[in-house]
Length: 597
Image 1 (cartoon, helix red, strand yellow):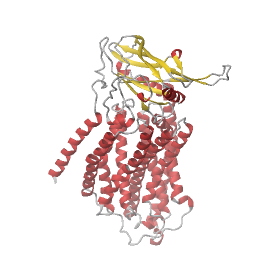
Image 2 (cartoon, one colour):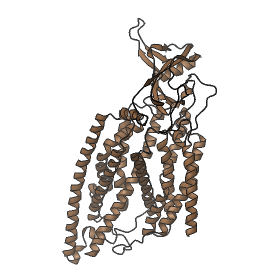
Image 3 (cartoon, rainbow, N blue to C red):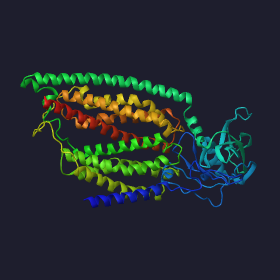
Image 4 (cartoon, helix red, strand yellow):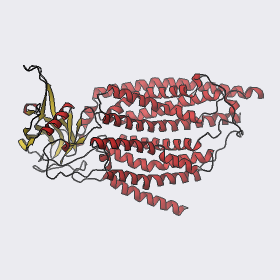
């Protein structure tokens, strides 16, 4: 047995190293490191064009050369990591040339004859506020390709004028031998009118201006943080977070105090009552409260995958907190997400098999099989549909076949073996469950309950209270996912998540106690639904966020609701597993306390 375990460990270690190498796929020319990016005067700088797309639709991006800009011969694509591909980056070489500290004035990029169809494509792009994204020395920067003007003063009655920027001005800041900041903008005084559907002869030019700055290389990414969250707003953000959290925790603490006093009163009453009076309330269902639930395989698979996602989220937040994972790293988050998801399946297998072995016994393999597809299956279906839509639009968010193969290999070669390995360990080393009393052969009949004691209303209460504590941070997360804000306050996000866990725990303990008090012993699935219902409110808020935004089009609509559904489903599983675990601990505690009495 020990030899097999050692063989498993060596196998997974080798796979981890190989897959980490595949996911990272570094490119030496642009690898970010504080010790690199040093240049001599007139040294060539690494420059790449990336994508273009409408400003209001962050998921709708296209390759830069899908528009008829000046193209190099040949077009060379940068080798990208899996995370960059998943993010939609498609970096290519360009005719723009940058030499360290060398100014360029009106440098000709190309002279190009643009036909009617190409003019129409530029007009469509300008009408939808297309922007471009470039990278210089691994620094991202953006700019618009043109502008619209309403010609309301002309004698002919006015109309919309389309102007294409033919000259791009690059302003580069440096400190010593390192690049610190890059900005780009189209010169409105050198824009060409393409309002008429006729062929146009266009000369594309650019200028580069270098200026010194006192900002250090280590702080060159601070501008993105400042842009996304101003210092004054950050202080207000902290104040709002602390204020709302304290109020909600006080309310939850008050409820917890009341429930604790009520529970102690019940225990005291049961200990002093005669035998006939003892069999009332939650005490009367002691023989049914820990009866293994229906659809146990599905329930424990759900708890297992929720535990996996909970651990995964904690690891990601920890990496963000210590600075290993930072938001402006191209594809860094997605690289870690894919790799850590595959590695963390061992916790899903362990939890599912361990719980199933405790309460049911044999047949844990079915629970493991369900855990393998419970989250991955719906995500795969949604991602496949979105990929087909992206391919039909020609968007860069469409995954190439090679990337799909890499993901499938990671899932088959690493995730599934780790899931099975965790299941074997969890079942073999499970803790034998010992209930406070023997279980009756037939479950006790549950009386008809009032509407406010039924599952839908308890789900509403169980979801609303935690949601009210996280809604402020949820807005910031959505603004970062579906906008151009860069979320950098990982400490607030971590504290918000801890607060949500505490509130979910206390609220669901209270709801479970209320349910048991009316002699309803089917608390297992209700604890899962009440805990996970917070995610339903999260999805409802994403609908509100979309309605209030300027996003439009079927592609953006599909990606927004498709990926948000996967996002909220993950939190449903996380919160459901937390709620189930605390409810189980509570139920076992009170009935063991009765047994001691």
